[in-house]
Image 1 (cartoon, rainbow, N blue to C red):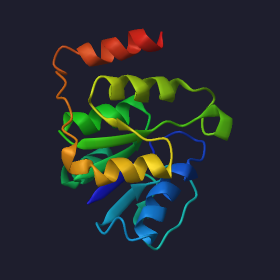
Image 2: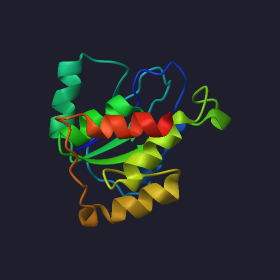
Image 3: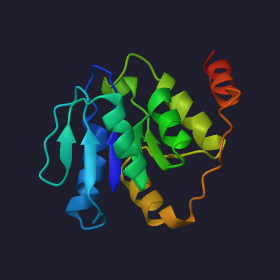
Image 4: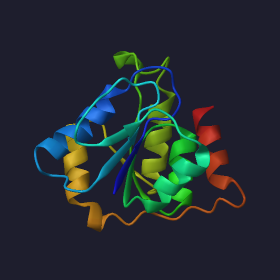
Length: 157
């Protein structure tokens, strides 16, 4: 199962859902897909969608997922990698009016550079990474001492 997480940002993020939906339509993805839309107004017969659910319920989906496709929110990314999941992340970008600035791009780039996740920017990135999913062995961070959070917080400034 693939889980898409858009977080709780109030701006739309259709770009993320369209990437995965296109891959389903083209037969590249055959797995069940569950999507947490947040405030994004997106409909697809190809995936189960919901706006928001309780954290405990979301954690059940995270635990069940083979792959998590997330927005660039630090909470969504860290909860997914803490659960020992493979994560693809796409940053919400200011130029698409998905966020007020590009701080998510900095977060995604840093987690990617550290080897914890795969960064995706568009459909082609997603397809390339998805086809190589079995080769992706994410580095396991140590969260007990919050070192990764400190590194990213310092990086963002």
